[in-house]
Image (cartoon, rainbow, N blue to C red):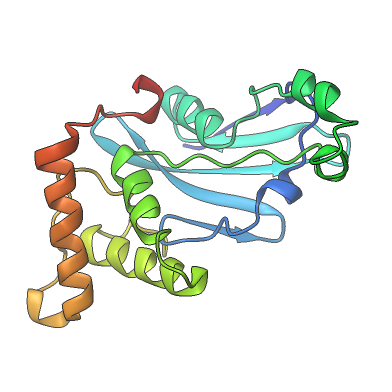
Length: 194
């Protein structure tokens, strides 16, 4: 069963401005609607978000936990009005803050996916970084039933296909990521707990 809630964002919010590079192996953007996988407890749900012309945001999830995760990933509750007011006339960033008032950075649902994005983001070519990130998520995470999306990765994600089907680059990157997660980071289950 899919539940729906309509909320008014805190402060200026534009889903359209916030969705640059929103699509990856765990979420996609189609016709102004972001559909994403969400980790809820030990399970995975699919949720979606779209914005109405009056500014309100329509959230769809499968449970209350899904709504909580969706509100975290799409930060409709993060009011940055004071920041915008304070820096509107700043000579360095004032013009940008006025032009992109409604833009908010979408969050990733797991620490593992955030670490993967940070690792891949170190590459000079952003297109190659996105390709590598998508390839690794596809390698590590099973498909969510009834969709083309993958589950968000966790520190315990395992390769979903035989090792021989992956490139040396992907295998090396996965080994580095696993090492960072298991040996050095002992990360909490959610970014919000950091």
